[in-house]
Structures are given as structure tokens and as C-alpha cells.
Amino acid sequence: MRVEWTKDAIRQKDQVAEYVRQQFGYKRKRKFVQDVNKAARMLMRSPYIGQIDPLFEGHAATYRSVIVNGLNKMVYRIDGEVIYIAAFWDTRMEPEEQAARV
Image (cartoon, rainbow, N blue to C red; front, top):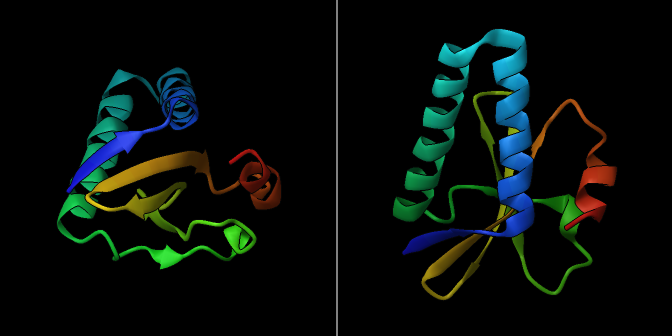
């Protein structure tokens, strides 16, 4: 299996990483990036580890999500041998608003 990020998910992840850098510094940003990469590698080994996300019940595809470092949600779907990361956001934000963007 391989992981592919959508453009929106990359943008969202980069925004969170920049926020972490501004608020907590480069060292914390580096740890954040390591945590995200670790979660993506974990999905390649165990793609069904994430729970089916009820925020996406109306979509044609089944979306799952995992929590990264306790504060961020990585939303993905599986299509054959590819795991598509569809969204990435801070869990302290309004979930319905974030889900509507996927």
C-alpha cells in the first residue's frame, strides 16, 4: 500500500505545521512532522486501523480517521492499494465545518 495526500490535505497539514512553528518553535514543528509521517507509515502497514468517521456517512466512499499527536485528525479513504489522505485538521476546530470541505 502507498499513501497519497490530496492537495487540500497537504495545505491543511502545512497550515497546522506553520501554526505549531509560530506558537511553539522549530523543534516542536519538527516533532509534529515526525508524528504525521509516523501516522502515515502506520496506515501503510495497517490501513483499517482508523475508525469509520461518522462525519462522512453521506459520502460514496468510506472515510476513516486517526488522531495524530492527540490534537489533529487525519481523514483518509482506501481505494485498492492506495490510501488517500483527504483532510487534516486540528480537533479543536468545528468538526462539521471541517468535514464539509472534504
